Amino acid sequence: QAKSTGNSPLCFFDPQMQAQVRERSEIDAGLRMALEKQQFLLHYQPQVDDTGQIIGAEALVRWKHPEQGLISPARFIPVAEDNGLILPLGHWVLETACQQLALWADNPARAHLTIAVNISAKQLSQAHFVDQVMEVLQRTGAPAQRLKLELTESALVHEIESIIDKMNSLKMHGVGFSLDDFGTGYSSLAYLKRLPLDQLKIDQSFVRDISFDANSADIAQTIILLAERMKISVLAEGVETQLQQSALRERGCHHYQGYLFGRPMPIEEFEGELLRR
Ligand code: C2E
Ligand code: MG
Ligand code: MG
Ligand code: MG
Image 1 (cartoon, helix red, strand yellow):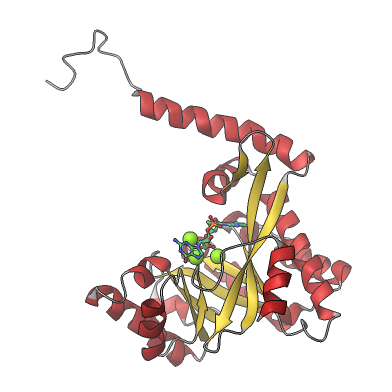
Image 2 (image 1 turned 135 degrees about the vertical axis):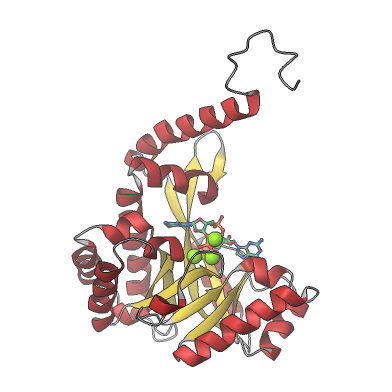
């Protein structure tokens, strides 16, 4: 019945799907060019404590497209993960963030700031990942203690033993690890205990509804207690309102990131924020 209007019984693609496929292949082709032409930049989003002090930043990549303007990573990171370009792109992100860390390290008023860098599963699964990170740290002069690598649960599904080894090696040099979007993936509590993590990040989906949905509030509370038990820190992402912040604070979370404290912004603006506060 549903197909009765079509004159061809072999119509596999609806127009919307076709548009999506086209957009993906346009992005795929564009990304190669963009890397050569250095069309990527980093925005920095403040991470703050209870007093509103900036304790660090998350580096978030943007694609400055010559015609389309700034393109969100949600549109191109999945494509880059599929076509392998996440490896050179991820390396560029790490290097650029470390250059910034090295600049801050030389300034006593900035030396305490950390930068969190998102790492894809493909990067982490590379045999030389540890060497690469160490090489970038040495070459840029960034202090390892100020670098935080954000992993998602999906990065931890395969080759878990080898990933734990890599994390331990980097951790010995001072690099920190944060588990991003926590609660949305497939973490098993059994291996969560074995991962040398420094932080859990409460996913924004739980933060969004925390002040009116008991279920979200319970999940946030559980993540906070879990972090306490693991003796690691916890940071809430996607905090947009004071109500959300106080709901988190009441439950024992004291580190935040979200539009309430600042959007991801170019480094010049971020530096301005540091001076303003
Ligand atoms: P993520 O790592 O979970 O980053 C947080 C996302 O939430 C960012 O989106 C940020 O702009 C957004 N956000 C921050 N505060 C708020 C808020 O208060 N409300 C709302 N609604 N959103 C907020 P963005 O920058 O579009 O990045 C999306 C995702 O793309 C990131 O999610 C991360 O998974 C990925 N990504 C970004 N940069 C990189 C990168 O350099 N490498 C890799 N592998 N992935 C990246
Ligand atoms: Mg992140
Ligand atoms: Mg996140
Ligand atoms: Mg996310």
